[in-house]
Every structure is written in C-alpha cells, then in structure tokens.
Amino acid sequence: MENYKKLVRERRAVGELDHPDDSVINLKNASHIVTDIWWDGNDVKGKVEVLNTPSGQILRSLVDSNVKLGISSRGLGSVTNAEGSGTTMVQEDFQLICFDFVSEPSTNGAFMGLKENKLATKQPNIFTKADKINRIMNDIIWRNEN
Image (cartoon, rainbow, N blue to C red; front, side, top):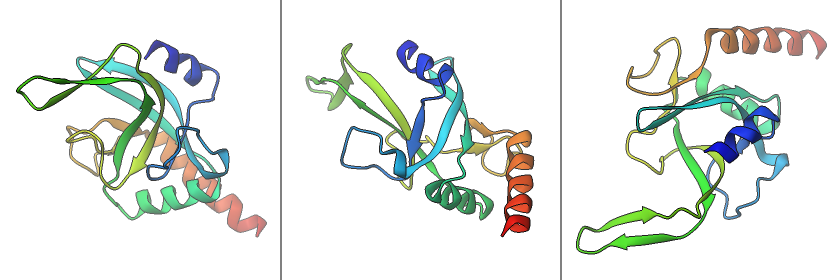
C-alpha cells in the first residue's frame, strides 16, 4: 500500500474499466485516477477523479445513471492456499498495480459509494460533492465548446 501511495502522490495511480488481461495499465483505456487512499480498519478506502477520456466519459455516464459499480484491485504476486479452509492467501511479494471499476468486484461488497449516499452507506466514499460539481461544470464547458 505504501508503494501505491507514492503513485497517488505523483498522480500516476490511474485505472481502467473492466479487468484487462494484461498487468500493464493502458493509458488509452484510463478512466479515472486515484487522488487519495487510506486504511479504515481492515478496509482500503479512497477517492477518485473521473478523467475526461473516452473511458472516463463512459464511467461518468454509468455513475450518472446510478449503475452499481464494483471496484477491483489489480496486482502481481504469489498466493498460497490455506490447507483445508479453501482460503487463498496473498503473500508479501504482492505488488498493487491499480484499482479498476468492474461489474463484478474481486472482493465481496467492494462497490463504489458516492459521498452523496446514492448507494448503500457501508460502501467506500469515492466521489465527493466537489467531484460531482466538477463533472457538471465540465459537461457545461464541453457542450459550449462543441
């Protein structure tokens, strides 16, 4: 998580829609950037900014339509299976690459939550009121330019 926080500070923590088959983040598919991330007990929470890219516009449209979006981490590393429990344990060599927005999250209950509580309150706060205002203003500016 500390390595990923460095990417957040450097504004390099971008993610994509869906889970690509590749471990490399394709910038042409970037939809959002993580602007803050922290631990809340055993949960990771964060804030994202929707990018004004083709994938970001799709993400924005999904959010505006109240689509329930999952969040899934993408990373590399080894895992072991805990004997008899059916549990897969991520090992210390795990390297977090990014967080992607998906239809089915990698962890139960990992769905995006809006600050305005449009979705269930137990979900992480991803979009702030300022983000929503920014989206509206960008849409107005975009319409006026086109």
